[in-house]
Length: 321
Image (cartoon, rainbow, N blue to C red; front, side):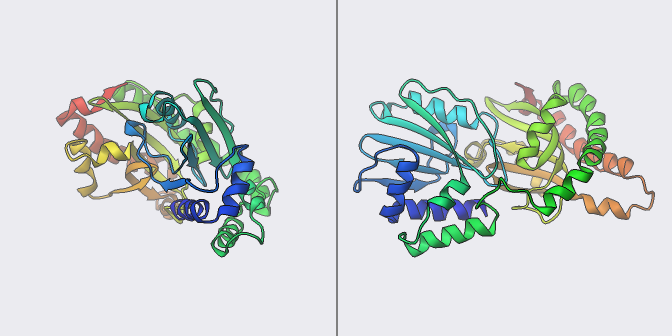
């Protein structure tokens, strides 16, 4: 859904001049009526692929959009660095926009001609009026259908979730505490206990470690994930997250490309390229032993053993950053 929403927003910004004019006022920018180029999935060298890019003769605007997910590690800082150092944009006004569904405050310093601004999808919703084109009206309907007209309001689902949130987090913590030591012992690092809560904003709760294959940084995580754009039900498992551009180069990450051929492993793109060993949490509710902790632990240990075997044959692909 996120990619679909981004493509519609891109089209509206490119073709609906009235909407683009209102959008530029929201950003406190002065965009001309003509000579504006809008594109999606722009390649920013090795820094990644910002979702939307708006270019004029004197300005470049990178827009990173999030719906249910949140910022990938160092994503905004990489885009910032790209804008500051890019020779092709040296004489242009540089703007970086972070557009999110949820409250996700970021600290990114202005300077070197770069200006950073955060927006929420509900601001886009409010911006759209009857004067705008039909496709822009459809964008407004889509935003409302996915609860982005005013996310500050509480729902019945929110209140019910609050009643069980402490118990649910405690159960997840028990599983993750067991694997914290394993990640430290096997991969020489593990995220802190407090960092788990930072993943809640992107619909996950996990331990993770930053590793390098050659000079390319990637992430190995173990935990719980409820990505509604990918799965209908919450999952538990292991996810390896690799920068998509780097993964697509034929000679890169050959060791990991074989993982998706093994039983239980899948792959897809969600921001980064994800190689996953996951199972719906609901499958453990039917456990004959009635011991969810032991069964989940056994499942994760099985997937981790596959990763460790891969490391034994390709140790240089698992260097600690």
